[in-house]
Amino acid sequence: MRLLRDRNALLFVGVSLVAGFGGTAMSLAAGLWALDLTGSTSLAALAAACVFAPSLLGPALGVLVDRLPRQPLLVGTSLAMAGLLLLLFAVRSADQLWLLYTVLLGYGVSYVLLDAAEAAVLPAALPDDQLGGLNGLRMSAQEGTKLVAPLVGAALFSWLGGPAVALLSAALLGTAAALYAAIRTTASLAGDGHVVPEPRPVGRSRDGVDFLLGHRPLRAVVLVASVTMLMSGLGSAVLYAVVRDGLHQPATFAGVITSVHGIGSIAGGLLAGRLLDRYGEPFLAGWGALLFAAGTALRCLPWSPAVLVSAVLMGAGLPWTVVAAMTAVQRRTPHALLGRVAATATSLVFAPTSIALLAGAGLLAVVDYRIPLGTSALGTLLAGGWLLTSARLDPPPPAKLPNTLRAAPSEC
Image (cartoon, rainbow, N blue to C red; front, side):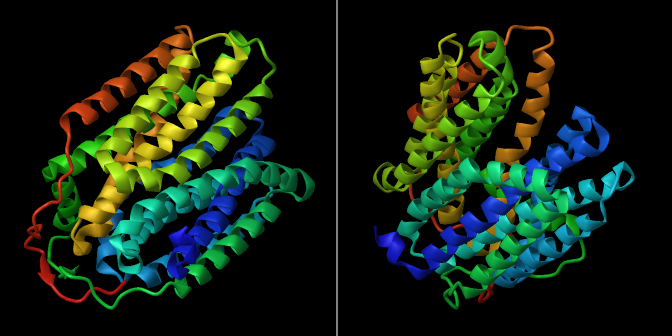
């Protein structure tokens, strides 16, 4: 595989492995930590919400990415988050729970900054025709860590407590910072630009929003990824109801379903690059949504083999929509706007998940679990079918940059 012979590609995959492992382990441990300190499942669930919440700030945080040198921002954000995690050594009782939530909010902010900065650095580090393959490979790497990291995080928490998991995650973020620093980028790109300071900071954050909303084909791919992620949250909220009420299995069977889902995600990520190169982003996003819809529909059946097959289909389909959206953003956004557009796309794709999780949990109190699953299947079926039948993503004409931009060499 040509990507595996590229130094920068290997460094980015390494970042996905170490940072993904640390983040997954810490996210699980944070919920266990809150539950252990308070005995409240609601406060434990709030830990996950703290990580998702900053994604709503994507357009504003994207301004920082476009105003600062991108590669130093990657390094600095990773090191700052590593230092912030060490504050968790002060958490001893429920009275310090606010500190845990504060650090998790910082984690959420770092995710938005790192995702947007990576999207801006990638086109300067790899040829355009390798972006889709790398995004798929990185998605597989991240999903692969989810097969092991939760077990490691839970075991380490049980053995040595939350501070040990925080220390592990901080060390892995330090490793990620070193990998970011080793990436070699081109000195400049055709059409590069940087943001010129202006007296109204609020106006700058809208540049990314306006570009994404005004680019119809790009907007369509991001929208389908957003709908699919929204529906995945709705379906995820009823997982335990599927296990208990549909399959009549113990709650631990959810772990089997999750592992099979991860295997599907790894396989889907490995295929994504090849399909992107051959058929393009709308094809991958549309078929990813249809694959996810088929898997969600299968999950309604009260039969364990059908639910395991559904996990494979959903695991493969969901990454296809995300990889397609992010690759389209990287390939078709002016370099000077990449931070803001990528951060906006990240908000649109991932922020609805937390809302859907809450909605799905609420629906379970009043309806059968198959109602949210059926809604999820129908929503993704319509989104994928619409994209495949109506949207095209032809090579765009040279983009006209906003007045706040001017041509200049860009620092990555």
